[in-house]
Amino acid sequence: MKKSKVIPAQFIYPFILVTSLFALWGFANDITNPLVRAFKDIFLISNAQSSLVQWAFYGGYATMAIPAALVIRKISFKWGILIGLALYAAGALLTIPAAGLQQFNIFLIGFYILTFGLAFLETSANPYILSMGPEATATRRLNLAQAFNPIGSLTGMVVASTLILPNLEVADFMAKEKAAHPEYEEMLPSKVDGLINEALTQFSETDVAAHQAMIQHDLGIVKIPYVVIALVVIAVLALFAVSKMPDTGHEKEHIKLGVLFRRLFFNFHYVGGVIAQAFYVCAQFMCWTFIIHYGMTLMGLTAAQAQNYNIQAMAIFLTSRLICTFILKYINPGLLLGILAIGGGCLTLGAVFIQGMTGLYCLIGVSACMSLMFPTIYGIALHGLTPNDAKLGSAGLIFAIVGGAFMPRWQGGLIDGDGMQIGGMVLESVRVSFFLPVLCFIVVAMYGFLSNRIDRKGGGEAPMDAN
Image 1 (tube, rainbow, N blue to C red):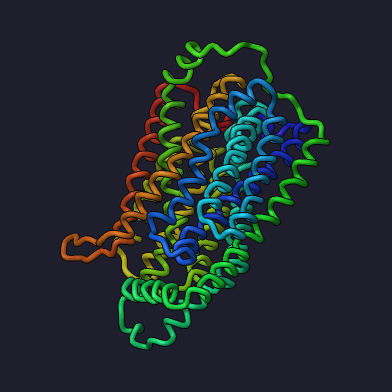
Image 2 (image 1 turned 30 degrees about the horizontal axis):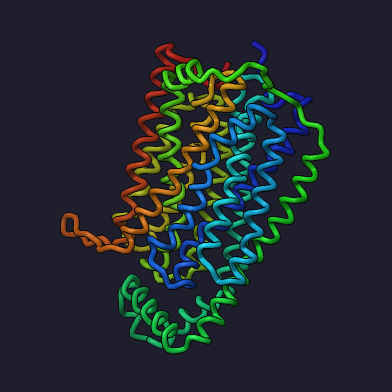
């Protein structure tokens, strides 16, 4: 049997153009993650409060995903992309008044609006890529496009690691404080972290002017990459505006909510996919956001050093994504998803229970298992839907990203709390917090294995092209 092409010739240019968007939202995601810890130190707030960055960022997805899908269904994928890029740029530019006024809440509003744009982009781009060719190769096509997402993520991480975190004066203060107290070398890193935070709080009270100058400098550093990416996004918007894009999957039928709900919500692959996606996003952002806390609190690393390990994790993520995309030619996506979810859970438990750098390496290794999950859940969930149903179905999967707003805040609260003791082993609060992503991986594994079982029994066609 003749194999279907992953990307037919007539779709190569629009595929490349739309795929560039995956890198753009990857950049936004992963330049923002390190700011959770940075804002904690700059504004002298708790871990739970600083995790409001994630609450605002992923809350924007929840607010706009369904409205975006309804708008896109009325207009086109291209117009959805144009609206998304405009909102992305507007939110990024709000960092200018936020830094000038030194207002954490304005940063949150900016991130919230920025992710309105990302909701439009993801709700448009994912089903658009699925529609650019045969259905038999749709999951592989989306995995290929999604492989460019970690390129943007890596760029965001490198910018954070080289241009933001090392240049923060609050980081210099903490380094000098550590150097001034040689006795800290004999203490647990978690204890040292608390003492340095106390010194920073005391500095803010005894030398208000100097502390305000520090905040002004550091927020000026934070805003620069957001202004630059806003200009890049505006340029991409102009390119899309003048490019002719295919109107794939356009249908004239009116929305019949009752019929649509029956088609979607009596479909295990779809409903299970929305649930699994929510838990996967929780796991991903917890593992990536709080790797910095793990490195600083348990290993005694600086923020920039801890972020470098995040970069290693993303490099592994990218490499694994490419490998897993190839493997999908030979194995059912649900089965591979389940296997990798079990692997991710085991490695996360390693980060909880194994002391020293080995535990940190386990946390880094989780990224290899996560690499396949988002696009594969997406492809399984939308497999077999009409293009118009996929537009609205996509909204549910993007709405699921709201998981990134809830669990990280809960994890931040656990980090602020006390540790626990299991079998005579004392676990610091940072370690305890990583039980949350373990639970998330269990849910993803259940969805993967159940999807595979249904496909094997003939309850649904396997979304793969290994014919």
